[in-house]
Amino acid sequence: MIKGSTISIESLKHDKSLHRRWETNEILYTDTNIVIGKNNRTMVVERNEKRWRTKEPAIFYFDDRYWFNIILLFGENYYYYCNMASPFTYANKKITYIDYDLDIIVDDSYAYHIMDEEEFLLHLQQYDYEEAVIQKVMEHKEILIEWIEKRKGPFHPSFIEKWLQVIEKEDGVHE
Image 1 (cartoon, rainbow, N blue to C red):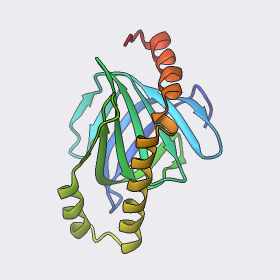
Image 2: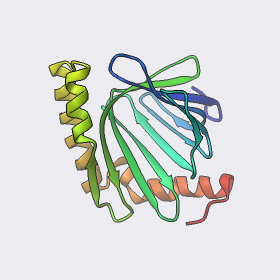
Image 3: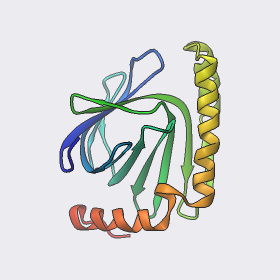
């Protein structure tokens, strides 16, 4: 993956079927484990082939050591949308991960809400999640909550400031 390159991002269900695809995403930073990128008004394709565009610029953060990914969205106020998901893989200009239903929404005051617990329980049975998967999701949910509470990684104010400047410069967004 090269800074400045354009990739797609695919979220899959546990059975490897498509959940959602973001078609145009720009890579801003990569290292051995981490990928940071952005999109703005990108086309999204749902599993039922319905298409729509995102409404606001976003910075995405993937780290292949963790069972979650984090999206920082810039609207009237910034907020985070965090997905409990398998570590990502990258091939053929595409980031892929398995979505494990649980989401954590974090507002600009760092208050957070765990979402879609019922969906997780339903899919746990429907897709027959292995015990090891369930354990990883729960363990990494706690790691993610610790990051939020301690302002680590993408939740640190310097992360927001740095990437907000990129968004403002390139996409004309002002907080």
